[in-house]
Amino acid sequence: MTIMRLFVGIRVPSPCAQELAKIQARLNPSLGSAYRWVSGQNLHMTVCFVGEVHDSYVDGIIGVLRNVPVVGGEFSPSSLIALPDSRHPKVIALEGEDAGAAQLALGVREALRANGTEFDDKPFLPHVTLGRQRSMIEHSVVNRMLNMAKLENLSFHHDGFELIESRMDAMGSQYVTRMVYSS
Image (cartoon, rainbow, N blue to C red; front, side):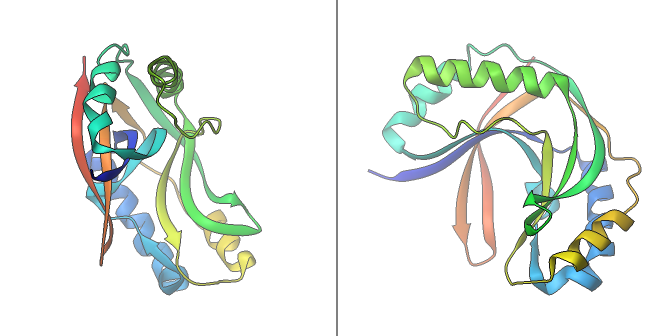
């Protein structure tokens, strides 16, 4: 039996991913060695983190997610943030508003709960992770850089979601789509 690490997410479309790569490039000179930047093809908004699951349960999860209404939406960015908070910048993310994704998150969680599938029940926060901390850096440096970033051309529309497997290798996490759900 194989263990898989799964999450439900919305992929960032290529034009927006290219703009986010420009932000990563502007942050890199000051923060680069302290962060591992998420590659363009891995940029996404997590709707629900399922976690580690035996492969024998994956077909059941795929099936129950087919019953979730696909809700389209528009991600509208508001700011770059540090997570879990500004004093502990373990993650750099683009935060925004997305009523459709919030509604989708509720539907996914209800379906998983009804199926008896465990998942991380943290409140949904619409965001796209840009980088994860790999070495210590003074939080004031991170916050100064985040406050200076310009956010242009970063809104994106979505009309589907994916069940995604996260696989670790020497380059970090690689994301493999297990199923696409679209309207």
